[in-house]
Image 1 (cartoon, one colour):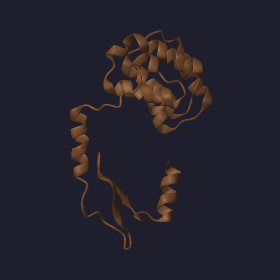
Image 2: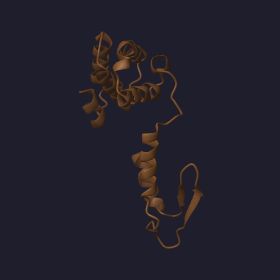
Image 3: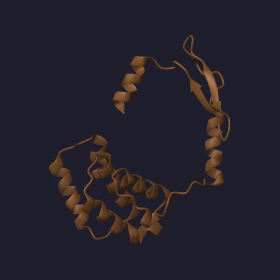
Length: 152
């Protein structure tokens, strides 16, 4: 329910308050449920301290069972809401496993060399290491930029 409401952008306060109260009363949960709850509340910017403290308390004993995705979602949601959970999962690692790095590199290498350009635009390589970063000047019109900013 919380995930669906988060996606729908329902912002009716009393409903979120009732859901938060139920989440606080809950004494246990599975990592997926807790990650989804944290994500839903973070998505609608519902930031009750008591709620996130309760979610932290519930996640701590089951944290070892959480998948990488559940840990990432939960940690993002808590941090986004102002209640980081480094005491549960530790600090974020700057190291990437070889399989993840290879997957990302393969996707980067598939970037087409001849990117469609509007007349007058230029493609420049800003950095080649540790991976290519391209700058595409004037690829979007000012109106397209405004629309993207509105959507954000």
